[in-house]
Image 1 (cartoon, rainbow, N blue to C red):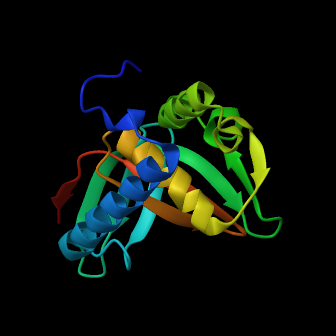
Image 2: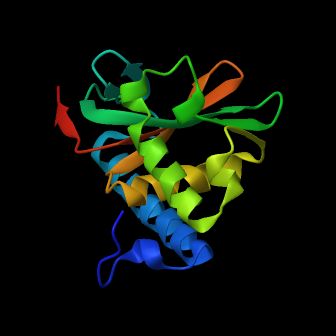
Length: 159
């Protein structure tokens, strides 16, 4: 990851996270208006790498997806996608970019495979990955006691 003039990844970590979280908040508001992401059903196909949101009004929004990590609500632990054997390696590439960012900055939260943390911190990790990879949004999908944190690219909406 080369640093270009004006490259935000060169900012202090706390500043980068704050900007990432705010940008994700704005993107999520737009997605909520477009296809009701907050109320939509979701499905992630690890073979195709696509996430599909189906809104209560019947709109289907599809986008290429990446899994950033999973949060176990029972144990309060985060597991990065880059070291999770249940995740297709092709869907953990953006998590790997976050890891590389963390390695360059000595950030153990971004480089240890599993950490005890909070759900808010998981959102920060996901927002950071979203920003670093120029993704269009993020989602937290429930899967039993586990929350799957996903970023996604350009969205196609249709009936």
